[in-house]
Figure 1 (tube, helix red, strand yellow):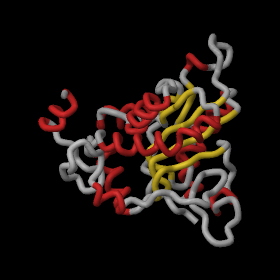
Figure 2 (cartoon, rainbow, N blue to C red; figure 1 turned 90 degrees about the vertical axis):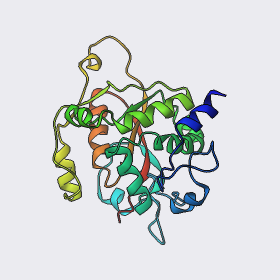
Figure 3 (tube, rainbow, N blue to C red; figure 1 turned 30 degrees about the vertical axis):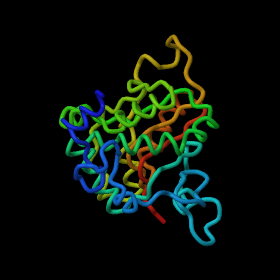
Length: 241
């Protein structure tokens, strides 16, 4: 009864078209599902990006660049519909759109995360100034939803982002990674010598994976802290090369 009343008072908006979802109770308009492009097999064994033709087992990005993380996966290819939707989540406070994406990810990646024997989900942090501006971290919102579905803890304090970097969009892959160097650190409570056991396997959570620079920068910090196995999950992944 409560959920039905909430739907009447605060009708859910579609994460793709932004209109009120019909029928009531759904998380996305049935007609909008086909505007999204789920990642299909075969995929890169490292980053989970779709591979085509005679590329082999790894995408061009992962063959050319060092990867500290073990593997990763994404729900959708980063097409125009996904780009518009993710921008609304990040910049227009459309956090409710993550209900659909997290539900789809929870269903699709449940067995994969189980095979990793993941112990904790770690959202990729944003700089405090950007968090204040937006009011939230979209990666943390996504991680919390996934954590509830999978009954896994979410640690939003493990990684800290204390250096405000310039926007990544205009930079090439090498510049992106350099831009992120030293942007992340481990919270002091987890530094070597502090009490408490570090997890063996963690999963980084983010909204978009493009060149992998952000995930790689986070992974290097986690690896240096003594975490042996690092994976990632994202809503969207760019095609790259």
